[in-house]
Amino acid sequence: MTRIQANLFLLFSGSIWGAGFVAQSTAMEAIGPLWFIGLRFVIATLVALPLVFVEARRTAKPLAKGAMSNFIFIGLALFGGAVTQQFGLLSTTVTNSGFLTGLYVVFVPVLTVVFLRRRPHWIIWPSALMASLGIFLLSGGTLSGLNGGDLLTIVCALFWAIQVMLIGIFAAGTGRPMLLSMTQFAVCAVLGVVLAAILEPLSLSAVQGALPEILYAGVFSSGIAFICQVVGQRYTTAPQAAIFLSSEALFAALFGALLLGETIPPLGYVGCAIIFAAMLLVELVPELTRTRSPAAA
Image (cartoon, rainbow, N blue to C red):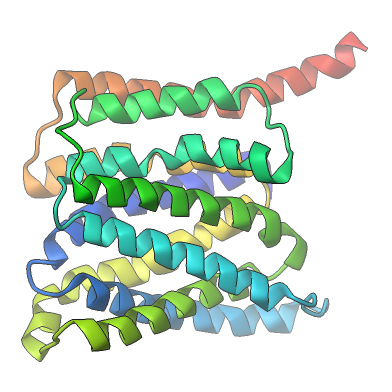
């Protein structure tokens, strides 16, 4: 897979997650956040399971020692992000949540430098700032006073950044992207269901009321989108992946307008253009500088 194809996979994930904001915002009218998380990841685990068997038959290389532990750590980061985002939506707006979640586009290169001592391509820094600015403008250019939900969503962005960084570290070397995906889904499913059974009531009517959202989040937002993320990140860097995944804010605004009748303010269209420009810079600048370097030599 080429880097361009990998980034298109990540862009596809962002589009699915963007629509997922609609599902997440409406599901909690019928069901608790922990049950929603647990059930969506049970479905995601079932979606990934047959792909794991296919992958195992086609892979001759044995699984590296310690790989499953690494996959579980990724699952814990994913669960942390899912929980803080879902609970944050109880007391913050979808607009604020979309912007604050998108802060992982800045957190990823920072964490990469601090913990991995890796210096990303210089274009990542201005592109990350551009994407953050675009997300902010997409939210209308204003944020209400930060409340508990906003703070939880900032923590969510940190968990997403950790998850993206860990996948960048472990996905390429193991050659088992489907197993990685299923493992992180299973971790979230187990933790979500166990905590929900302890802390939240559940009824058949609640599940039925939120079933379309659970199915969308389980099959598409969790199953397909996260699998595409893991596959795509095998062929690109974590900071670049964060830029393309941040397109979820753009698609969230689009699907909000189409499905919920929300309107994009004029400033939001400027934000969309800035996000798109950031994605183009991340894609084109490394290729152009790589092309010119040998010629200069």
